[in-house]
Image 1 (cartoon, rainbow, N blue to C red):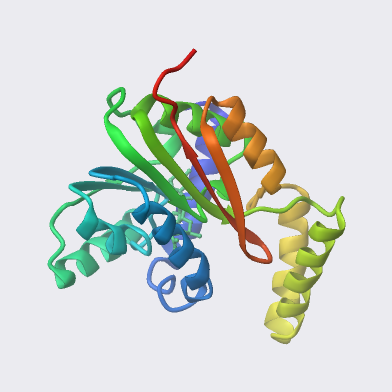
Image 2 (cartoon, rainbow, N blue to C red):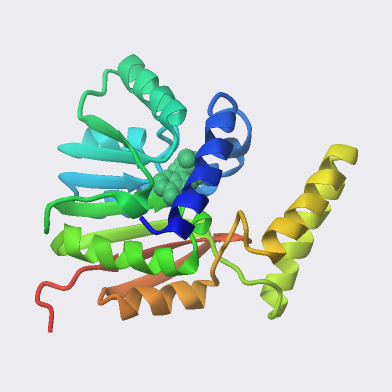
Length: 238
Ligand SMILES: C[S@@+](CC[C@H](N)C(=O)[O-])C[C@H]1O[C@@H](n2cnc3c(N)ncnc32)[C@H](O)[C@@H]1O
């Protein structure tokens, strides 16, 4: 990994380790519509061997596992993976393998996967690393394999759509009182400097996925801030 990747990974690991005990009951609950749309998009795919990138405590991994032969659940945070493992045990799910690593450092055999899914994780990566991951996934997927990305998809305010989304997020934080005001100030700084959340617009995602060589690219907006993108690795590459 480069120094910039290692620095970003360290920041993310510290943040997510600290959220591991609360993620299921706090932020993840608000993402249920996006999780449902991601799982639905995956179920349409034939997915014996699946990779879930930034799986957290298993919001997508666990509902998908019964219809897969194997799921490789990758996350930067070991405590979140431990939550996932405990939930899998309770549900009697035995076909999930967890790997604690930044996805930027993940290595897998060529054409070993049928489906790559990721929900609300890639906006934590720098844009160059999002593109790197798209290229690596293209190598890991078998021809005809599917890519499903659920994530916040908006820009930094240059379009009316962006401004509507950002204003709605700011209003929701303001409504929470002083804790929300403080969070808003912090988020404005982090978002402007692209230190923590680094979403790309849906149009940019679509272009990046096509540039990486995927076909059949479709993007569906699920809630104001988030879309699900689906794409296919072509059967023959030119
Ligand atoms: C917003 S949570 C989403 C978790 C889960 N996919 C869900 O739908 O609830 C983002 C997840 O991405 C993981 N993450 C962030 N940066 C990562 C990286 N570079 N490599 C692997 N996982 C990462 C975090 O640890 C966290 O679990």
